[in-house]
Image (cartoon, rainbow, N blue to C red; front, side, top):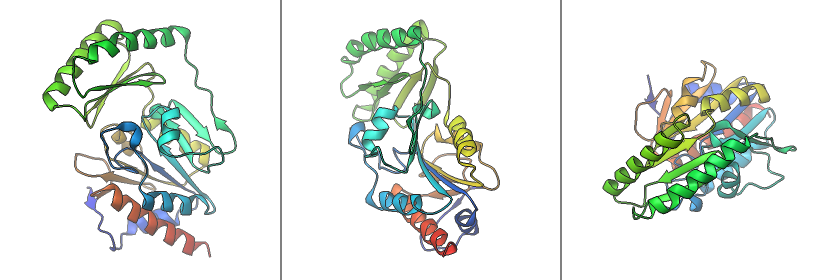
Length: 265
């Protein structure tokens, strides 16, 4: 059963994850590290989260990753992620990776997939001009349609129009919905695959994963009894803990950083 974490309270699950021998802290970005914003490319991690990530990333046997549906190039921009960053990135729901000291891992795309994606973008771009406030995002393996700036009725109509195009032209692509976003991808990886891959890569004995949306539940459902799942905000969830906002994620990460540092002195 999910319980609410209150800043300043003691929680045994938080202490346990802070003390795990090899810790991976994996965070969704939009709505978790950053508040949700109308302009997707204006998202930035809250200062308290950026500070906690920096504190955690320098601790022994501790890895930090952002796991996002964003294309890797866009995730690097909004995360203000430099070439010498110690933070791992998993973009496109786990179809793309960037590792410290190595850079971007190759993510193959066939010429057929690339040509279809470009053709779809060419059809959807003029179509969506008929729906004020709805924005089209070019993704590495697909397309994203953002409805947050639009009237909800306009958003629903736009999503229905896009669904018709995709059913006709790319019926096998994976469809995802989130908080006022509709996505389609030629790749079928989800954040569950990202968590599994990062566990193997880092040798983590415990993973803290935090997210706020439907696609984050894929990751939360594959966590084990040695991990800790955190849901940001309302909604049905497989997480152990719930917090009310990204600001509280910053507080929670600060507690974990402090406890983990103290345990290694």
